[in-house]
Length: 311
Image (cartoon, rainbow, N blue to C red; front, side):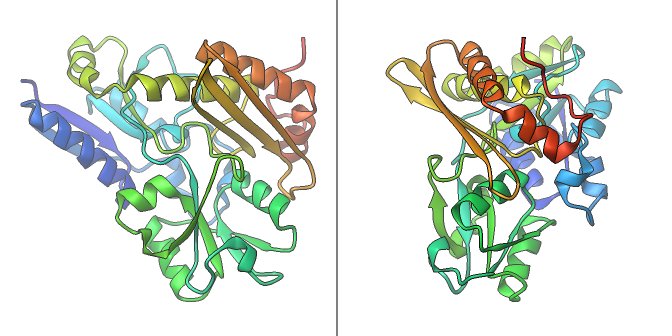
């Protein structure tokens, strides 16, 4: 069995994910090493992610390592991976998804409804901020960067009354003690691909593609393909105020989607079913655009934002 080199970010969560995939590969007889690669998103720690505005900010340098043959595969959080990959790379496997929901964490409050007026809530996500404002316009939303441990420490130290994190991350790290509530997708629509991992390889590396094939989970691939098709239709990356969540339904898939103004003043929702994941995603994206999503996104990012025009 060939030795496989995994490229990963150096955060605690990223390394958990890389080690998880490493363990599964080793059970198949491979020897595995992990190369830690610092990405643009890791280097810019004092600016809200939404203001950085760089697609691939957590994947670009890892893809460069793939291209230079320094690593054989990359393990990403799927929501960080741009919806359009270079033809040099392949999304070779999508393992079974962890919990896709967002989590409410607090030390003194058991639910968002218990937060006092003007409570300080931390999140790094424009998507969470927008939907939270639509639920509680009185809250003070503050940018929160850093790894999961750092964010939890700031919560414990009283810098925030509550913080919002992806449920998958706190679950994978065994840090669910401070979770007080999980938002259902009908309350707060997750990011496209949230809770799923992406195994990326070089498109021409048949040996590695074959080696990771067993990691593929068809139902997860179908759901995230739908979500990413919708996101791609809107020209969005991982730091936009867009939510998308697909799940199995009698017709194949049900896709819930949201585009929201950061202050929660305007929010557009779609909820549709279909049998073709990518077609359903594209149709929901077009429906959102036809109802005013482009205006919301242009207001957030300026007129230069690559929001598709209506045909």
